[in-house]
Image (cartoon, rainbow, N blue to C red):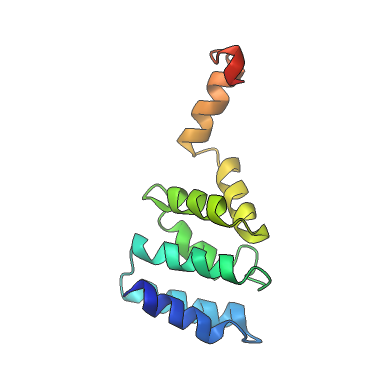
Length: 122
């Protein structure tokens, strides 16, 4: 499954009145095809290009991407937010920040709360 195929499939449903339901069908197909981390970036780029779509809360695309949590998904999301933040991608990033299992955030919080950070780092 290529980035172009994923983008084409998403573009085909972009104007759908049933975007969330159609997204479930796509993510089910991608899962059945054993799509990997390479599927995350085209989904995020689609979200960047279509910020006004109602993706759900969080929606099937986010649930699908979260299958790659601790497998590189976080970095792809950060890159997306740095490249072109949208309300949905920033909200997704906030979900990661609030996750108690997120070791990077725990390390930052732990160092700051313990006073281990130098004053210019706080």
